[in-house]
Length: 457
Image (cartoon, rainbow, N blue to C red; front, side, top):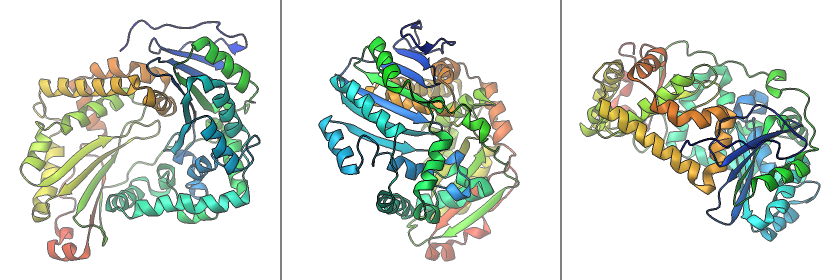
């Protein structure tokens, strides 16, 4: 995947000359004078183009009074703006251009994308420009959209796994929980006003806090020229939003805690364990080691799977890591065998205590995990429909260089890197464990007697 990197220089007059990022040979980067970073991904597999704008915004920017409003803001993006002053006109234009469109809100990114025929690139970019720069927040639109956003929340709450996630993460993040909960808070969502939407816009929606990706059957020189022409007069904030409105560091988990939540929708018990893991600002090697180790544990041949699934203690168990700029969580999710939950709980502790043993995984398993990650990364970065979103995720939560160097960095992860990661973040470190179970099973199985801290990890 990583070949000789091609760098375009001086393609467009008026684009700031700055140090180039390391990128694959069909990726081209420029920064406009207003601070907007533009990446063109040239891919001629299908006669389509995708434009995506990502903003460094999301749950991590939200204190309690704004919890969920980045998500609501994302929904309002598709309503009205100066060129299309009501949603009916907005939707009609998307149909005229034959667009597929959507947006997402996560912990550290809000992104919007449009995909259309390559011949509509100019029109599509002007459509994006109007929506991102000149939104209109009408009270009547917000009255319609608030229940839509809150409805997403309510549907999520009908899932036992989501309820468990909420219960555990409230303990994991404490009073900073809103900065890890993109879906938000019911009361905040339902009381949102146009004024609060403007506060979000005036904090984060600036070119110097955004990335524009133009991907598909496009000519890089022409794409940069269109970006300069259409977005070049978008005024910079004049400040770094994350300096002016700094993100607080997440407080470490103070002590290990177990919680049991009763819920009628939990047809079978589900369990989570969560630790604070590495982040891309302070421990990029740790983030790579976390990915490799999690993939090793997912192998059917791993001691983890053999001890917990093959021996019938759980029907499913997974340990995963979320790569983030601000404290990525490491979480175990499992569906234990109700008849063997005591044994399951003890065996999880036993396995974690042995994670750093020299023989916990083989050299072959280490290489297999790396090969899986390499194939998955190549698949995501070569598939036209996912290229833009993959890139914007890494731009927001790491960097373009991290994205480019991921494969060689991950392939160079050693046993010692994994051991250091485990000792720094997992073994003998505080965590939060949670179980969701229905009332009948809770009375029958009495998990409070054994789903508790047996000894320190």
